Image 1 (cartoon, rainbow, N blue to C red):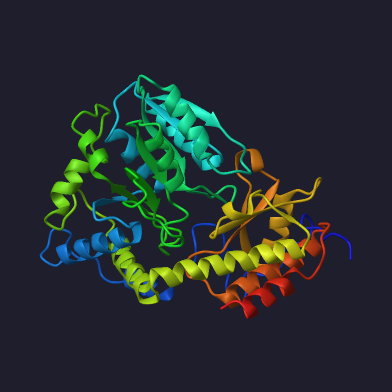
Image 2 (image 1 turned 135 degrees about the horizontal axis):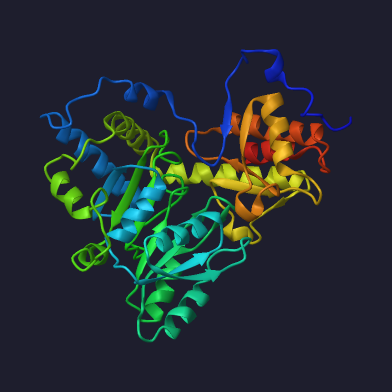
Length: 403
């Protein structure tokens, strides 16, 4: 069978309604469960009224358990990028130096935010195939004898590459260097899907968002804030109003917010947190690890290559798959979207056209994964991608033999 000509034949040009469900297999936003959709459909309540504090306290308490912290958690009506900005403006002053370990598109994005805030940014370039190297962290901080670096910025689970870094090992490296810099971690595509321990791992600020493991639409950004980071707010001189932790903490103590919150998203968040607790976080993490392993088994069965080079650092929420030389990954994605109504993530930045990114996180089960992998295998065939058929069967064998 020859390659499918997606340019001249589009089902969307012929029909206006497509039966069945759309497969949203991005690494975020993820599928929103019916329970969460119904919760968000409730009538909006008065955010200054007597019923609101119970909602605020429920979501803040639930988020603390998911972050693995007993300290402050703040919720913003924002994307994860807003969480990045909040972390920086509450702890730093103009001209302060931060060090960013640039091992993917989103790590590089955090560096750009810091630069726009007039911070001095030291970018440590990395191989996007690999994770942050704790030995490099220690070396760089030992070289900073005058302690000019005020914060280290890293991504726990790099959504663009499918590479997971060891946050606890990075903190141990910082401690070994006896360096006072804050550790700030982007956990946008790991929180609620992979083990994360803000307090135990010694993280000062963790940033996350609503649209991935927390199973909500985009629109909420989060900061989990440790005591050392909170103590920096008194000396931080970057302008802040909307993002001010002190205002958030003051209002949250009474169960309110300093401005109008995204009330219906908070209804959804309360329901999503309840779902995670009903399943049990340990079981949630095992489910994601199992689905990731089955996905990687399919990739191996197709004789394709995961972008993450080191097996132990491959993500449990997203698998980036390199396409063979000469194959346009975006063209493959278009075939799959057109023929099977399934959205996959594309390559970002330097990886544009080179990888497809399979999201396997959030509200997700075995049959959904089987459908996802089947759509990809058929798409590979229709797009004329050199591969070996049968990857889906390998994944199904894995799922059947691993509970």
